[in-house]
Length: 105
Image (cartoon, rainbow, N blue to C red; front, side):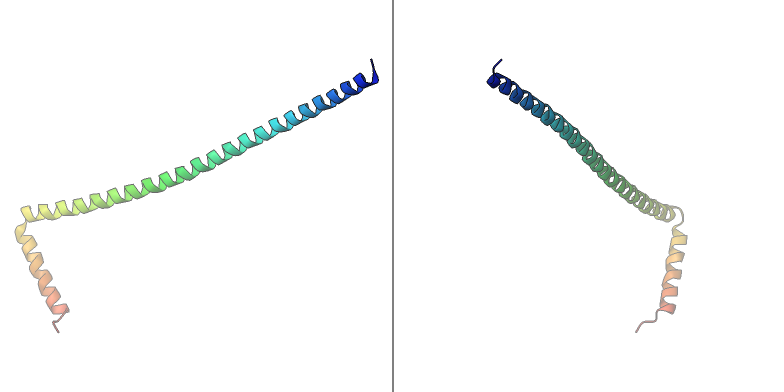
């Protein structure tokens, strides 16, 4: 073998070694990027989960409030149907109490 051929082979080996090292570094970077993507996805999922829980709690509170309002309205309607005389007495007593505790100016 000539000196030139041997130098070419050494250069090719160095290029091959360099390419293998570059490939290893790129593979490591790809794994790191994948880890970061998984972390970001987990953070987004956690954020969405907390928003979902917050919205679900708010919906439940609104439904409970609506149910209480409907229950109160149903109770008043039932009282008006069953005991109209009692509702009338309560209205009279309330008017009497308001007139004695809040005198007109």
